[in-house]
Image (cartoon, rainbow over all chains, first blue to last red; front, side, top):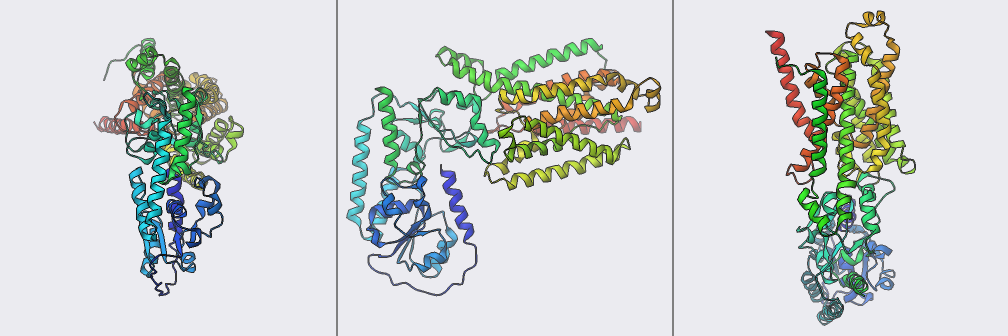
Amino acid sequence: MKLRRRAEEMLRAIALSIPLCAAFFSPAHAQTPQRIVSMNLCTDELLMRLVDPARIASITYLSQQPVNAPLGLDHIAEQLPANHGLAEEIIKLQPDLILAGSFTTTTAVALLRHMGYRVETFAPENTFADMRANIRKLGALTGDTAKAEQIIADFDKRLAQLQAQIPPGEKPVFADIGVNNFITGDGTLYAEVINAGGYRTLGQALGYAGYRNVPLEQVLTIRPALIATATPWTNPPSMSTMALGHPALRSLVAKTPQIAIPERYTTCGAPSLLGAIEMLVNARIQASG
Amino acid sequence: MTHRIPYPLLLIGLVLLAIAFGILSMLVGPGGGPTEISAMIARGDTDLAWMIVGEVRLPRTFLALMVGATLGLAGAALQGYLRNPLADPGVVGVSSAASLGAVLALYTGVSLAFPMALPLMGIAGAVLCALLLQGLAGRGAVLTLVLAGVAISSLCAALMSLALNFSPNPYAAAEIMFWLMGSVTDRSMDHVALAAPLMMIGWAMLLLVARSLDALSLGEEAAASLGVHTGRTRALVIGGTAISVGAATAISGGIGFIGLVVPHLLRHQVGHSPSKLLLASALGGATLLMAADVLVRVLPTGMELKLGVVTALVGAPFFLWLIFRARTEFES
């Protein structure tokens, strides 16, 4: 889940340590930016939802990968030029606004700022409220405040519609067991998504906050109502990924209803979250029906 | 000096102790004690309770028992055969060579296609190490053997790190801890089935040399005059150690100190008889490793410690104390 995204972004940051000839160049600050570049998977989605594709100079290559395709935006993502978070390729695009994550591609961001580009960073969203704040912030930057409010209203409307369909009763447990038995608890965007879909996470059921890895025995103390079927990296093998094939986990999965939520639906605080919530609500409806 | 317990009583005592720790090992764990497990059964989650007790705890208990017995037995056999109190599968490098073999089998994907490759390549590593030791140190001085063992251990650990760092799997590199320190956490019955028959073959080979070891304690020539076939004895000790330790290490990683400390703990109790020490050390090793595995589960360390960390934390100070006591005995 989150680990992969962090690893990919770290790789890009490392690639940036290649020294660059810093040419002095000051772009003109237009009132409404017309050549916007996004260097972060999560700002990609917000940008594509907010502004006309003609104003987007580039998004990350990640958003063009099928596994990361944001909900309903594939047709836009595949037509836009892609970047890999490298300062050089971004300079070439002559952007008038650059969007980046606050903890990713930091060396590129520092370099671009040093060269006089306008770079705006966005903190990762840990709640729906963070997501709404980031959408408003982007709307203010691009001069699309009304559209930003519209996106938030649409999200909230669809969220309310979905939640109205959740059958009554206590939220059953949804188990998403990651490599090394990593599970998610309270205080995370992931848990908020799962809760919005009518379930509790395994970490919440065990009383944990944040992400943590737990012994297999502890995973088995709670019977989940729904289980995520991960596709662990088994080739080349490692003991950590092979451990997901432990006979006890195999039989737990075999006797539990399963769901495979695309990674992108839970990675970013963005309207794609509705994809995950819809799948979970449907699973609840199916279970009660 | 302490009182000696009669040999049959000692064995019975060790068996009872092993049974006690075996039962304890089935009762404790992060999934909950007997109360929590009974509560699970009472609320109808019998299958979950069985998964915890039968599919997670039972295999780790079996493995702690069998790997502990292997290490205790191999330590006693090596010490008796080499007439060297420092001999131990860990010290002479057999454990790390076995780990290296297993690492190559696992991370190249060979063991995915052919599961038996895991213990077999562990054994191959152990055999190669034993042959190398034989060539380097032969039946030479204590120091040569230990130095050769240190060299082989370091080399194998370095090659293991190299192999793990080359793996494109992002989780592989962190698993060096398992191979260097050992663990039976969350292993399954599949693992028990892979290693158990091979470990038992190794045990049988080692127990066959009991008599010869007694004769060897009088010196090689005296032993030969008593009808001991030295070549056969050597083959059985090296082969038995390599097969049992190779299979054990391939499943549980390299666990130190059991093979070194247990024979020392029991040597006086068996009247310094190498043959009697074999069975006693096997039982003692099994008991000690099960105790260590219970300890890693009850210690409030967050994530479980690796077994080798506990055996070293307990074993190393004990061993230092042994050395200290031996020195004062020699000097007085």
